[in-house]
Amino acid sequence: MSEVIQSSMFTQASLEQLVAHILHEAKLQGATAAEVDVGSNKGFNVMVRMGEVETVEYNQDKIIEITVYFGLRSGSSSISDIRPAAIKSAVEAACNIARFTDEDEFSGLADKALLAFNYPPIDLSFPWHLAVPQAIEMARECEAIALAKDKRITNSEGVTIATSEAWAAYGNSHGFIGVYPCTRHEISCVLIATKGDDMQRDYSYTVACDADSLDPIEQIANTAVERTLRRLGGRRLSTRHVPVVFAAEEARALLGHFVGAISGGNLYRKSSFLLDHLGKPIFPAHIKIDERPYLAKSLGSSPFDGDGVATRPNVFVDNGILKNYALSVYSAKKLGMQTTANAGGVHNLFMSHGDKDQEALLKTMGTGLLVTELMGNGVNMVTGDYSRGAGGFWVERGEIQYPVEEVTIAGKLPEMYANLVEVANDIDHRGNIKTGSILLDEMMVAGN
Image 1 (cartoon, helix red, strand yellow):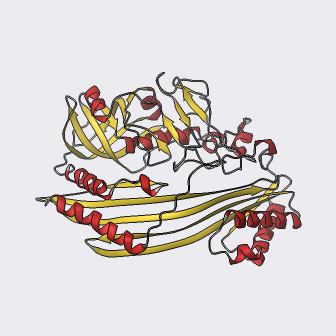
Image 2 (cartoon, rainbow, N blue to C red):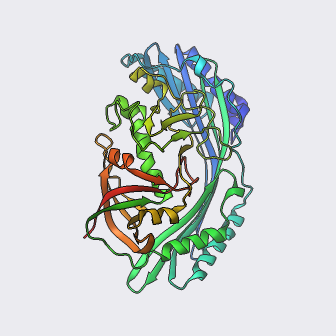
Image 3 (cartoon, rainbow, N blue to C red):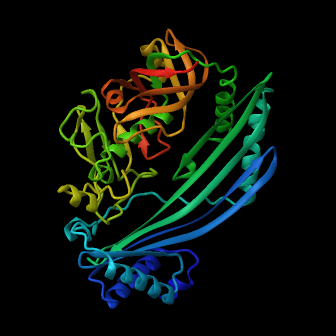
């Protein structure tokens, strides 16, 4: 363990050694089985506002989650200290918890045959060799471009540049230890525009595993300016029922509610509006929703899930019909089903799309609301009731007419999904859920 103890940042070998040591310690203390999950990252972020450096933050941290089993009893502890004495104490604490908890017939490790012993390498680690002074100058340049673009851009809430390198590791007493590195880099620009008494705020950002895939700072600045200016002159609407287009970055949240509804934890707790819906139509027949866990340079990729189970491409919806739930080992046992390797969530979820871009989708809609901002979290996962604050643009004859603010959009998620008209091809790849803009045939828009 000496090499691990002295390491300020993990390597694959030191992580494997650390996990093996913890598992061995659990066995010495009498556990019949154990599993260890390690996350480690280092990096920095800088923020520049109005040409001045607001913050420079360095981070280097790690978290180690330890779970031990005594038959059907389990206990967990977490630490960040990797000295042998600290590890021994953490394992002892988990063991003490496990000895006095009630048995849970669904607890335990994944079957050995399901573990990712031969997991594929995925290109997810692309360190950005960027020094802090370089990051500061880049942020200043981005902000300067934005402020010089239009005199109505009167203020800035800052340009932030962040970079991090991380390691993920999982191991259990079946003899499996998996380790992989990943990186994440991001640039964001937040601006304020003023016209008379009207003041509006908006932003743009870019994020990627590989810094070479980030948008140029000129594009980030110009997009932030455009988005902020177009919000000036926002109006409220009278309450009405109209078609709605969710812009791609907000459509992610709409699809995220679907992911929550098919997640094992919500299902076995009977807190999902899609309980007992396997094999039933949820979306129109032209919709397919699937996950692709092995994509290079994708923020949602992973060779194994939080249970160490080998990830695989899953189809959750095909021809509109719900084909699979998203299950971990524990939730699958609770439901009498098989894990889908989704402990910790889905991996690169894609929704099928058509050939139209957002502009063409607005023409298909004709008259209605384009939603570019959502606020609040008014979603009931048990009933599917949906109500969120929104902002965006009023559209007539397929053309944007004016910005809209301070409205609420409402509906029921089962009906919204069933009445989805079309998905555009403007896929937003900046998150784990990847979809284009989505047109729904009708929602209630509550305003004045």
